[in-house]
Image: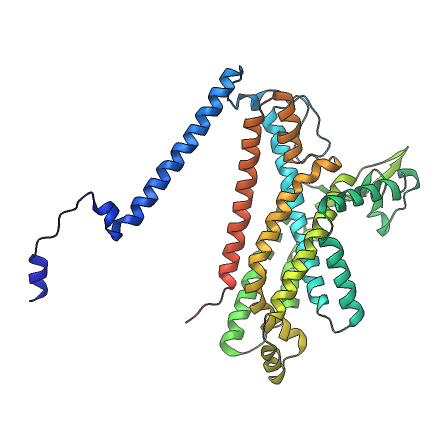
Length: 400
């Protein structure tokens, strides 16, 4: 019998019973039933909530977001007054949360990698000090560390009139907060910004070319000094060509407090350091585990080829260890972002303090505020996870 004979045979007609008894369709049937049941359960919950609100004389609505907030926020990145609507107060809190999460992830990653590598040092004292740091921070709740830093800044630092001026006026620590110089932008500062962005792009293009050349020819290009030159030289030259379009304003003592410069509140510093140092302890253990998971034979083979220890770590060990380090690192970034909701403990106004705190209490819209708050953390967590997964796929082992 030929293939044409098989094609000529009539196909068995579809029957509804196949949705249950035919394994080709059974999985789709079960998924469809599960989705319908889940949709009905959510619809029942929403209808139940709306009905209960109506019974209590409440209306499920987000119109309160356009009402005046009627409260001040002492830390803000955008213009805001007490007459601004609640949605703008929520945006101020969201920006405060994103700033602390971004800076916290940067500092925690830097310290975590540094401590994780030092944890494996052959120097007994260095390795034991790093072990004490790791065990000390990760076995104490992060809220306590945040409160410890907040209390230390308020109690140990001097008042503004007695505060020392450090780093040539670049840092003034006081019990009210930290004062640092602030930039003063000129009219042509945007041109300098474009040059800086172009320098960063050029640096990454050069590094990619250098790695491709090394893989193709074996020739080692001095990547670090050339990258630093691409990053700094065009920007510095343009800075002087444009006549120094960016100035610096230093804080100065006037009366009982400092004026000018940039004021960083103790609540921000306590939250930033508490979250960063706490998370760095977990990242350090991830780094240590990732490095130790690489066989010693890899190191010995690199040494036998004449590679020095530094290049062995950068070219052989860390690229393989990243595949082990990055997945748990994503979880640490998510934990730090969500732990930033502890900011209310030290008076830092993040989105939990604005939308989930004062706005909720003033409007009585607890369900609406909590849903918006949950949606924000969900979206941010998914974005962080998605971005890190893209990087994880980029460094993953690619088989031929």
